[in-house]
Length: 284
Image (cartoon, rainbow, N blue to C red; front, side):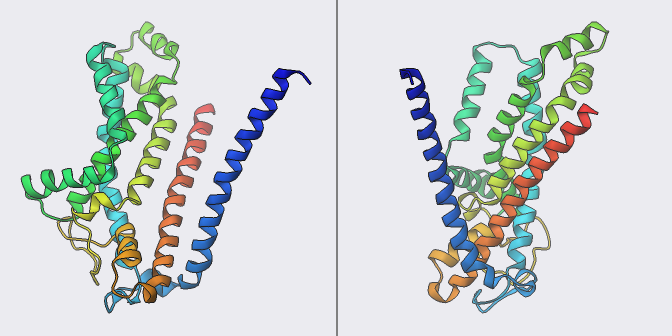
């Protein structure tokens, strides 16, 4: 065996060990949460209102609140993010200004979520006087998800061959017609997949909703977008770190963590299935 083969095998072995280490850590964490939280999961736990400072009852308001704020995030981030990506990739000129915009968007993707939470308080709660509610939290999470949506959508658009655009333009189509008929059908699977993954990340965030509308104990459902709400990540944070009886509510915390993990995994699985379905339809 020559030197190149030895180096190649060593590199593959190191990569495999890294993969195995990450997978093992993930399995240990998931197994711990599942074994300690599965016993708490029941129909009553998922559908009942909380009682006695969340020491009894269920987490139904937290599930509904998480769904509503994620929906608001999608309504705010998806159209705006996809539209921005289409403009940057299809219409904007490749100059210093657009490169600066792209660099800024990628830098915003790495900003800590707590910064978005504080910005949401200043902009939506105080300046716009919306108050602490579902709408403020959803728009704050939307701002946090926007860079991810733009980046994922633009990368999907870049993967569409330039010949698809040129062919449509050569046949007399307008710029928008070529994008709508020849580009978007091939880019949509990747755009939606990246967007859903961004929304899954937003659904599990605590810091952005910490100051913008989330409440620990609300034994009722929100009646409008201007009401406060319970959310699974914030609920889990309080149960695990701030509750007056942490040991007593630990099973509830594990049950909440398991529900949140299933929710995020379901969104990721939905993104994978949707991408597969859309690509299958496109090929047919």
